[in-house]
Amino acid sequence: MEFLYEYGLFLVKAITIVVAIAVIIGLVVSAGMKNQSSEKGHISITHLNERFDAMKAALQNAVLTPKALKALSKEQKKESKQKEKAEKKGDSSAERKRVFVLDFDGDIKASAVDELRETVTAVLTIAEASDEVVVKLESGGGMVHSYGLASSQLSRITAKEIPLTVCVDKVAASGGYMMACVADKILAAPFAIIGSIGVLAQLPNFHRVLKKYDVDYEMLTAGKYKRTLTMLGENTEEGRQKFIEDLEDTHVLFKDFVSSNREQVDIEEIATGEIWFGSRALDNKLIDAISTTDEYLYGLSDTADIFEVCYEHKKTLPEKLGVSVSTAIESGATKIWSKLNQRYFS
Image (cartoon, rainbow, N blue to C red; front, side, top):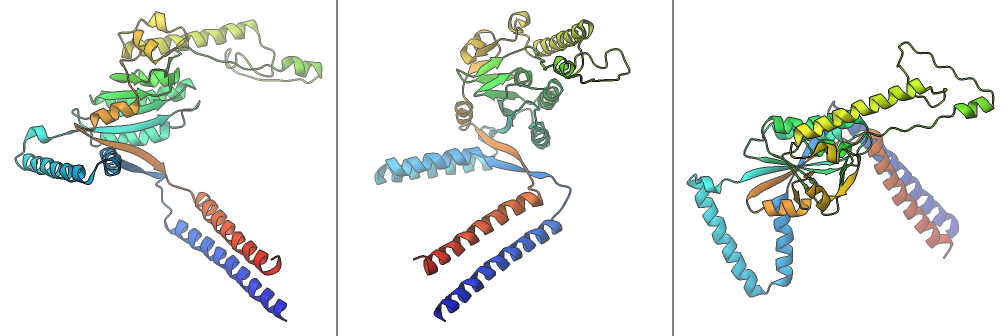
């Protein structure tokens, strides 16, 4: 009887957990249905000065003596009062410029251009010529049209005569450099990869494989050059030459774009498809200075208010459910197994 009692108690608890999970799912679904809107996400702002100050305060509390901390606190209060007085008097020297920090981490499709569009639009609603926009850029390049759009988003900033700085810690090559060259100033880490001003296209051709197994492949087009090279059909020399002409034309457009934005470079010297590390890129005038993003932003923090602007996608209902349900199931399963192990296997 005791065994049946214990088993019944365990079964009731297990059912309770399952019901609780079902209730949670129902609440999440209900909330999701109520809060559905056309908004795909929202802008998130982080005041980086506060982050730097918090890091500094944590270290000071750890390494300074109580006496030194007391003296430091008095000095900080004195500086704060002087600043408040200057602001009340309307002293222009108390005004600090604003720096807006954006992020672009590019893939072959430049997928992050959607977030870049949103953050650029947000910044342009408030930024002035006395401010600065800093873009943390990382990309090895990708599709021509995608990176053309991404660079156009950055051009919106310079068109408003707002200073634009691009910081490259790892790589800004090919389409990545197409974006970077729009900036008024390009900074790169010593071993960041810069350049690759060239155009690449490659595709396999399976025509001989199909022919070997007597597989016919037909492609119907209207227009002499609707298709030049294909993966499955038999490629012709005429189509190959046209494809190369298109590549060359794209390369010319790329070179013209870079030279129009960075007149100081010798475009024929650097538009060979080669890449250079940061220090060598500086010699070739592809960048303006050697610096990491952290170094540059922290250097600005004494004289400017720095705001990191991000666009955060709104999670879809399946994403919310995925996290909630998996967490609830894992927690419930753990509790059930713990009880089962305790009651019957110990």
